[in-house]
Length: 394
Image 1 (cartoon, rainbow, N blue to C red):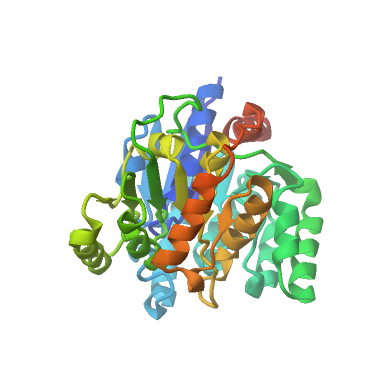
Image 2: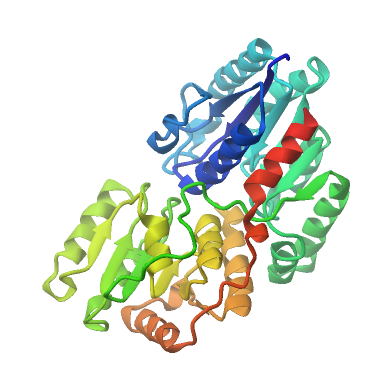
């Protein structure tokens, strides 16, 4: 039987969330599929956590690479750099000749990448008759580039949307503030309705089972996520010791924490009043810690929220509220609002974040009733369902 080749392209910008979701799908694909060969085009530098995944050929798109620090830099938009990257991606498609070309998040977000991706997309579709697919974590789009997304989606055969139908898609429309934005998002997803597959949530591949032994000391866990914005979430969480003396308090700043931020965080952690609070940039034990936590402090990012639902965690969510430069991040406050209604977890606005306000919400969650793990395992089968759908496209 002839080997079927699949190319995945993604640009993580130092965020592990996109990587974890994508590689959860790839692992499921490897478990289900036979005679397939998987290639990953890394638009950002290859991350150590995914570099060792067996059976995958990693191809790093050459300089300049996209990271948190320079994604919006004018230097990144230089035509010469876009041309270099476009040539590399196109040559990879010509050489590999895939049956399917999968983009992660693009073209719903990071539409700045279209100059480097469009030549390969056109060649894959027109010359190879390859299937063009999108892996989309949540029903959101950069609405400032609405027409660009519409034009690019004309090339696509399927959109794998990694949420259960009738959940975050409805929450997104309720969250948007203007009628024009609501209409744009509604129209966009209406136009691709026949191409869209709701896969359910993609459970991170390193998730531990729901049941496990609780620690002897109650645990307060704060995690900012890999897309490390809003440093006060970390600095404020480090100051919770004065309010919760008998607790194990652990704070995970995120692997894309800058060197300057890390020095500030370490200084705060060493202050006498914060003694005993554990500070990490990242930890492989995060799912186990989330399962064991008495209260989870997070930004309501995708993977953290999926695990929180899976384990029935009590939580305080401080979502990234977005800005003109990072407008795609409005998925976090939308998800936080939806999860707050669903789970009774707290939602705290970043502008109101202080040690007393955070401690008050943590105490409120500690005093609340235990959460039930009401979601069936089928709610978290997004990786396997995506893999099945993708294999059907081949």
